[in-house]
Image (tube, rainbow over all chains, first blue to last red; front, side, top):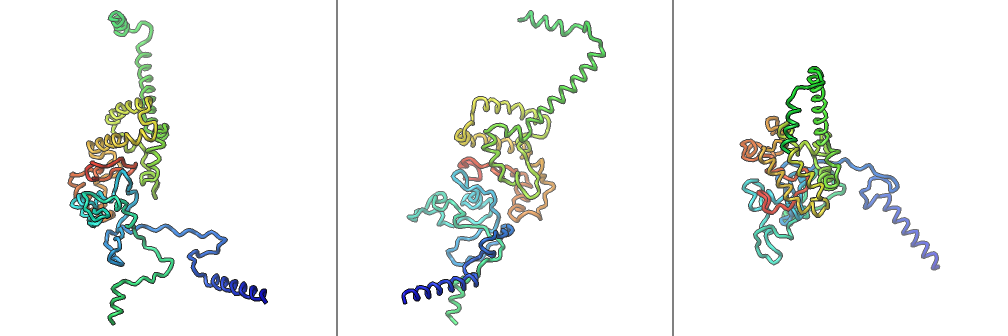
Length: 149
Length: 196
């Protein structure tokens, strides 16, 4: 009796796994596990300099230009040579937001805060690629609009 | 000492005793050609990548950094080697630079930058020397390839054409003012104009 329950549950689990494999759930691999996939061709970074929509108010803006070879370390911060308060008149680039000049206690500093120094921790370039998975993100405005109806 | 100089002067200033005029003129001409050829060949050799990266100071610091940049690896396979940017192409300027470079031989012998730490400590000074040189000659070594007259702004990004058609075109700025650290890593930039 005990044995037959065990066998039944094992069969059930195996069946579940097979169904999952057949539907190719939770993998973006594209090829079988034992074969090497052809790596996709590298695409170009968008360099259009056009500001993009933000998906939510607190989203760090994405970078609308190339940042190849931009040095960002203890010695130099290439980003800030255009986006810092002192440089924007020459560069006509948007200044980094004032929050970047605050320490974690909210005190204002003369220069960019150490905790905001590494720009590409939050700000990234964009490429025109086909998403591998469907994105179900809905903008808050759309949610509110749907609610009102 | 004075006597010695006088004796030599007498020998040099008196006519040849054994060699014919033809031998001396043709021989002198041939030797001149050989000397000049050898001199230029040796000079050109000191402009090669093999020579520059022959010492570990260059090979393991600046040459390594250069390799990931656009001037070394790119889609079209055009490459700028060390001397393209660091040695003037014009003959007289080249001679002047080569004479200055004798200081680098001194540095090599006495190990001024023979460790990574020494190199990093001296990097700002070395970089500043190059910035000053390029600023003084209006970025001549950049312009040997990147001629402003041949630039097509329509192929440049908005930001690039904005800057090039204004600050660069008016002569207010030169290449090196904005394009520092494009081929090598930058030293500590605190206090450098446009960076702090």
